[in-house]
Image (cartoon, rainbow, N blue to C red; front, side, top):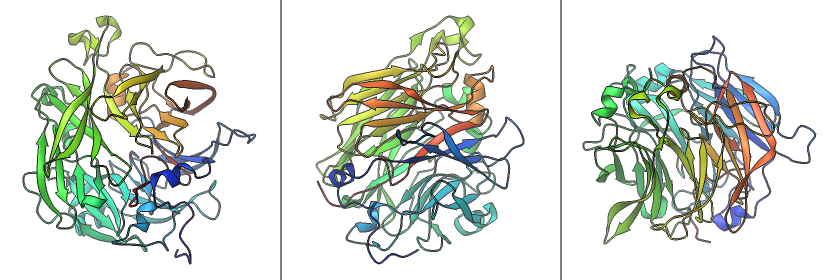
Length: 466
């Protein structure tokens, strides 16, 4: 729907976004794949501490098909609509674009007029994705200045071809087609984001669908066959410009978080595991003398554990890898949050100096061995900090428990991993603490990514400096 004035949730700069009103609702996708024959769902969670239904699921939208495997999703439009080279200020942050990563189906969900009761308004079937883009297994969604961009982890119905990016029309959600014109030797895909002011897109590497749909393939991991590179693309020319290789032992390069200020040309990316010592790492990429470079700036070591306490895949190593599977950066570019799904910890780093991060705080919950509980939940919790999302002012952090259906069962094989969501409060100068009054339990439906009403720290791109 077109507006006569810009959507009030669009902001020119990160600082202006931080001054926006607090979020009232969260949209949380959750999956039932491998658990039962029920479809995946979109939950609406009440985040207003003054509401009688605070910390509760106030509505659940069930999809019409089973087996989609919801993972990442995003808004149709955001602050990038104000960018000067492709302005679309008449767009509205209204529709959620929700891909099924296993089915390659995409749902368009309208959050208005009632944000508590969103409705499906369009379904893009997998055959249309295959025929118009060549791609399959849609993953990350970003609201770009000229279209909706979606990454795909493979091409062809079997997913064996290269992964890449395709686009949807902003206005009618028609499938436009693939984005790349020249991909060079890029084949693996996962996340993407951009430095819009520099006309650069970054893409990362996980693996091909055959390497994750039925679980982690240990032989491929030990042979360093998962992704270990980040690609930099010319955004205007739609061609690969440069590739950085982190070294084959740095397996599964996932979430990309560029600095929010448009005049900063650096960002952070996580590596899930090193085959050298099971550690996880954060790398800082930056521009130097006209080229892109990266260096490892955070290393999180594995933790020794008794063999009897470990799942079969980890018993030979007698250790728990941190398994860093998500990161998120506050809108002031000051704090980086790191989810350690294996050890059950969320770390907060002060990244005021992006090349010398300092650990500022941590909380613990779940974990492969610890199974640490929550003040509002009796007993142990399986799963750990996974998809993390920040409020625009950086004071509230939310995260969920599930990574991916088959990987959940591989690392938590007793099948006790259920869906839950917690909230962490952040102090302005650094330090975090678990909110004892906020705990949402989704039962056997496993929760994954969170989107906040009005925007969050991993949605918007800003084109004007603070």
